[in-house]
Image (tube, rainbow over the protein chains, first blue to last red):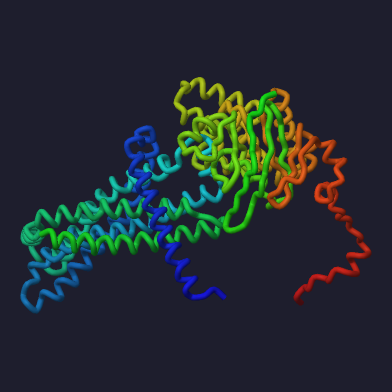
Amino acid sequence: MVAPTVAFRETVIGAVLIVQEFTLLCIQAIAGIAASRRYIPEITLQIERVGVGSLFIVILTGLFTGMVLTLQGAIQLEPYGATIYVSRLVSTSVVRELGPVLAALMIAGRVGTGIASELASMQVTEQIDAMRAEGTDPILKLVTTRLIACVLMIPILTILADGVAMVGGWLIATVTLSIDSYFYWTWALEALLPRDLVLGLLKPVVFGFLIAMVGCYAGLRTTGGTVGVGLSTTQSMVSSSILVLGADFLLTKLSMVWS
Amino acid sequence: MSILLELDGVTLALGGREVLHDVSFRVQRGETKVILGASGSGKSTILKLILGLIRPDRGSIRINGRDITQLDERELQHCCREHMAMVFQNAALFDSLTVRENVGYRLRERGTRSGDEIEKIVEESLRFVGLDDVLEKMPAELSGGMRKRVGIARALASGAEVILYDEPTAGLDPINTCLITRLILKLKAQHVTQIVVTHDLETADSVAESILMIQRGRVIFEGTSQEMKQSHDQEVRFFIDPGCRFDHEHEATVLPRPVIPP
């Protein structure tokens, strides 16, 4: 039986090694951005996969989030006779927090796991080795291209999710709560400050980076055949979700300190 | 003939287990060398070391006189991989590309030839392996033997000086085994340097100019096929003839019957 101290030491060393490898991969992927012009067709393909492919789930996520938020918000505001201000609550919550986080979590589930499983399959079938043998840098061709696609498309998808969520809230506000459209949109837009918009756009850029890099890292370090592919996919989903939530907290806290 | 490749005292451990121990051998330019050994003996690892996909713990690997063990990825590309191509055990064709795109992959990546030139080379390479009618197919639509032949076509199209084969006939039917063996022999006749890793004695016997036998990560024999057959070394003899004879009467009495549930 392994002594607890030895097991603890090995766990710590393993964790440090993972952080070191992940950081190195991030540096190499970013360093490759300048040279990635030669892979524009690959970047375009990834943009289509991330952007167009995630459109449907992001729209649905935004729509239902906005609708639920309006219903729940109205219940809380009704005792104060402030139901008319529900759109302020919807717009600020969606733009600052829910839009970026929920869109990122949905994209982590769809795109992040897709990246991890694709790269993991390539790893276990020696396609990554074949790529290196053929003279291609797999980090440039596989990681940098996916990183660019995620960092470009996730903010756009988030803007879309935010917009659809506010439309969803408007539907419930006008149909169920009988709030006038003019008041809904006036209060919704008035509540938003420039820093909300900046934060709402900065977060998805960071989340896009994390989703792409975690997916690529999990895929590239896969061992152990088809079982390993499954493990990497799960690991990618779990790690990127936790990192997205952690980064969200950190960015929110930093923005508060800043302001 | 000049020496193209030289491994000297190569030792490698993976996951705490020594995979190769003090492996040394040379490959002459234009030679077809077979690395023979049982499964898990470290043969395929040698090919990955030669390509610089992994690095040894000790020893040197010289290609055209230059030690590649200390080179970074870019230098490896220029002085090693540029001149070599590998046919992987399961062909390792890129799933997302057609056969045409797979075979012309390296030429497109290099970007030094026109599209028409690449097309011509791709078609010629596929014709050489007898597969000029599968250009637009995806790898998933091909049989195991066809995938390996496309792998060979990819190696040929790259114009590599050295072709490395990892178990080229493993898991193939006799007809496909014969086709692959013939392709290797055709290239041997054209004096292409080839290193063939296999556990199949028949393939080794057919194509080898010299054989290197590996057992548990150590070189136990180096010589011609004829010398191998005449070797008195116990391990070599055991590999050539493991003495696996099936005595029906004896096995029937000694082996337990499988338990079949009611």
